[in-house]
Amino acid sequence: MPISPLEILGILLLLIVMVIVLSKSIRIVKEWERMVVLRLGKYVGIKGPGIVFLVPFIDRGIIVDTRINTIDVPKQEVITKDNVTVRIDAVVYYRVVDPEKAVMKVRDYNYSIVMLGQTTIRDVVGQLELDDILAKREEINKRIQSIIDEVTEPWGVKVSMVTLKAVELPEGMIRAMAYQAEAERIRRARIIEAEAERSAAQILSEAALTYEKHPVALRLRELQTYVDIAKEKNVIIITESLSSKTATEALASALAVGKVKSQVESSTKE
Image 1 (cartoon, rainbow, N blue to C red):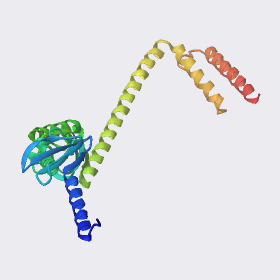
Image 2: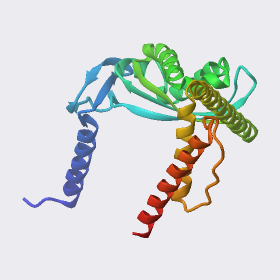
Image 3: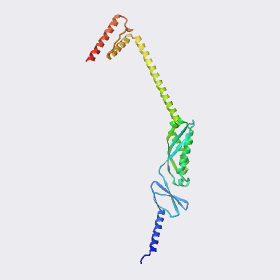
Image 4: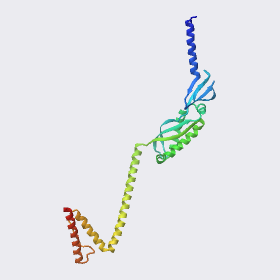
């Protein structure tokens, strides 16, 4: 018996309705997702991962991602405790640990965490001085993370980490800090130079006492100086030493210097 066109049209409509029904009743939930199922608006449970069957037009499934999510908190202008305006750029890392609470307790947990992060950053940073903000960023991160996590715990959200990406200062403050650092380096350099001068003076005073007790040592040091000058082929001027009490000693010293100079010149020619 041949099929009339109306029957064919009815079969096609039936197939379309079945496809629509199946698309509404069969859902695939990924491994990192969970589905909160509401039946006629009432919570009935959490399903997934895998294939989930829903009653068409009665059940509603809300997908919740349980992976770690990252929120870039917009830059916040904050006045510190010592009246310096800074701009703070932060990042919040969190994940949903209880999909039921994330759906039932808060309307939009992503937006709520962004707003909470902005408020907490302004509150915490505003209670600190600029030097503490720059030097204790790790402590500030933990403090902000603890406050946000305490608030979001009833939402079924766990805040794992908060980091301050950047702390931007006014141009005038940057120049002032640069001048301060430069002045500090100059102060340290002058202190080191003064310490070196004091150490050198102490060593020279000890050497002077030694030469005073042993005049011959001073004469030998003088002769060594002549040898050093002769190596550079310079003019040598010999003066009477404190240890040269007689003409014989002066003559012996002069001969010794001449001998050393001749040895140096012969070695230079070779």
